[in-house]
Image 1 (cartoon, one colour):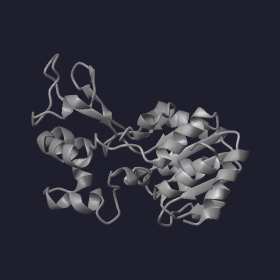
Image 2 (image 1 turned 45 degrees about the horizontal axis):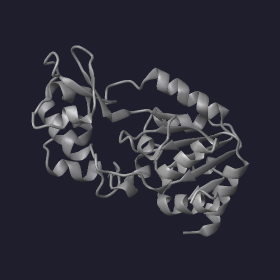
Image 3 (image 1 turned 45 degrees about the vertical axis):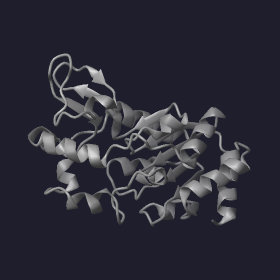
Length: 250
């Protein structure tokens, strides 16, 4: 790792008054959760076991039309209940605890930010940890959809249970979007990590940042590289752990 890049990020954090983090699948890959588009990722490996593309299987139409197949794919490829937070998750929780970070805006659905201790987490695409009966509206935890039943049913009314994740063909939650925009507009440092910034409309949020510094941590180039004043392509976990050390969090 290029040590001076971590030092530069730590210095920007020290100077910042309000930080916002915007993250994608790459934030959780070091926790053992595959990303979407890289080799070995969800879109690369998922097609070998199922006769449909991951995009099709993660659509609203497919959920209601082929519910059993949806759940087979969902349980095997989208849910990782044993995953643990990595140094980036812990750094963000540290920053919030110390009054530096206002919000985590994430495209991930794994709940690892909360598991690390972050409180103000704006989940653009929902969470696997929440599930709702499509008939009576009763809320359930992850266990409710992870049993042996091919299609999980509501214990109260027998209705179909649906994960609270945003599927293709569904709109993002307007309240979450509004809170995300507000957090970005108030920030003087935006840290973007582990995202290709190609998934819309989520990625367009980065373009709304007009604060002082934009730090972008990603292994591969993104459409917003030219807007960042600090680019880091090293492994996020190593960078985050070094920043935690420099800030005195470990």
